[in-house]
Length: 215
Image (cartoon, rainbow, N blue to C red; front, side, top):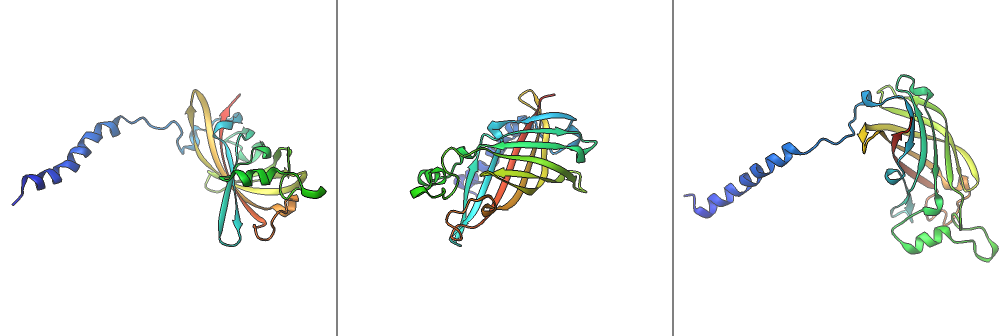
């Protein structure tokens, strides 16, 4: 026997689903789509409000710890018909490094004690910079290997970034194209030696950048 309570229990989810249907149907499509045909040739500049470099290190062999560099500025010259000719430069303000712990933020930027070098970046560190030297498109047409030179803590070393296309379209009135990238480096190569080996020498970087067309 189906009681009133049972009928209500069965009908309530259906009623909610039906009520939500018009809202789902009316939801606007996001402007960026993973369609490389939308990408147009030209010069682009990073939207600093939506471009980040995340880093992670292993802590004491127990787990990974994460932090961020924000307010990234970058320039990109891109022609979809000749991807290997693409060029990218980026500037990352190390002084704005951010973690979830205020004490660690201060430690990353504090001067060395007793005249010694800082454990990590020290106060008022110079911005890190990256300049591409080559771009090798992937066979899938949506990935690329970007080789270039990274300058960090006064040291310049070659790095290679595995990049992939995320989406393109017109956002906030501007043609925009987005990419993500990953790379791994050794911080000791750049003279950042604090807490080795308790905090891993290997640093993983995850990069996300939205480029807006300028010309």
